[in-house]
Length: 502
Ligand code: TXE
Image (cartoon, rainbow, N blue to C red; front, side, top):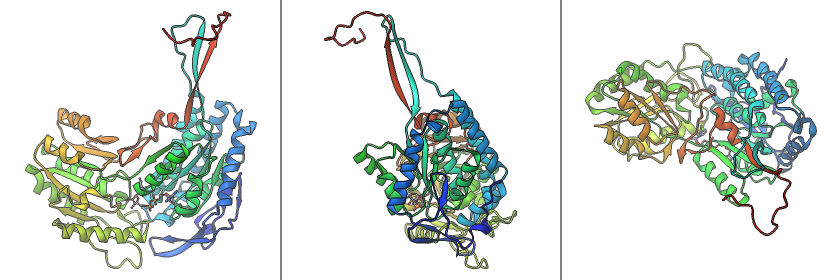
């Protein structure tokens, strides 16, 4: 049974994990803050280039080692099944570690911890179903088929909002395909990934298959994305970093999948169940304090029901209980970073100065000590050209806009740099499906919101990035196709003419 708890990590500098063993880093220390108190609770190291190199080298060696290279697909799946049992037996411990690091609701982090074994088992089941195809190439006595194989060492860079959930949705398909991984968690929330390394070892994975290096993006992260031993980068984070990774990929030709931010439209039509819709809108933005890439931060309400829907949303926002994320009755915890508190304040000022109406919130609640809390905030009279409607805030700030008809809605909703998620509340199936076809978004939720499944692909378009997590699409992300051609005719080939299909 694994043992690392919050108490073990408190006031210590967390180790890194290279080649199946924990070790101390030689890099300078970084403070990690508990957002509920604003105080340092543990430290991590900013790994040196040599340590990142050692991690990639260990992962590369594991890739070539017959212990991992020649393991059967079913055995790989069994190892992953065994790994799934460990987080399953440690839900509370994992959730407590992550709440300490990012301040999200304990209930939310528990739900995300419960999703870890589900994700591991889903991809474990796929490990021995990854197949090639046989292709009838119109040539007699010729066999043409494909095999799907691992890419190599995957560099996984994850953010602070849902660290282990985002890590597992990357590493589970990567391991199922037979890759090895080096994870660089966010400098703001590394504890979960460090604790997870112990579970991978306990499950019996060969040394070097899973490695964790910690540190800042510009140092340890940069050393990872520029390392020649990396076969692919899997990145979830902000668009600015996504662009750095894409630029580097242009130089090194290292493929990447990028899940970046969003400014997702969440639509309420006049024929919707208005209370269910208002609930959905409130949950879509204020759950996780708006710190999710799919947050429904741009709410479009049809003009005929605008006043009524706004009133319901404000009433529900007013009723939200803010406080210690470990309490079961609390609905809104602190923001994970002090810089996010400042970012929200800056957007509140910008929205006011651009003419939006502050309908609720906009400040910091009293009586919650030094925790990084902000009020649920609702702006009305927002237009699509305002910064609050165009830029990702990643906080509990809802911008409400008006639309007249479907053409007006689609024109405004699609007028965005981002295209990650979307949602619509309507009881008219024709309208819902027309929206589904015309909206530019990687995900469309109809009469629901924020309902992901490990079986269903997730990923955006435009500035929200490219590539997919979850579903069989993820297997395609972490494997490559090799084509094999066999001539069994026994005939001599004309050495000077290509045997092209006619
Ligand atoms: O992201 P960063 P931050 C959005 C959200 C937020 C903004 C900034 O709008 O306000 O991004 O958040 C690593 N080379 N999202 O600053 O910097 C970094 O160490 C290699 C959306 O936290 O992109 C961390 O591990 N790595 C989002 C990871 O990238 C680098 C989730 C994410 O950090 C690097 C989080 C570099 N040059 C923020 N620079 C989502 N899509 O869910 C940074 N990193």
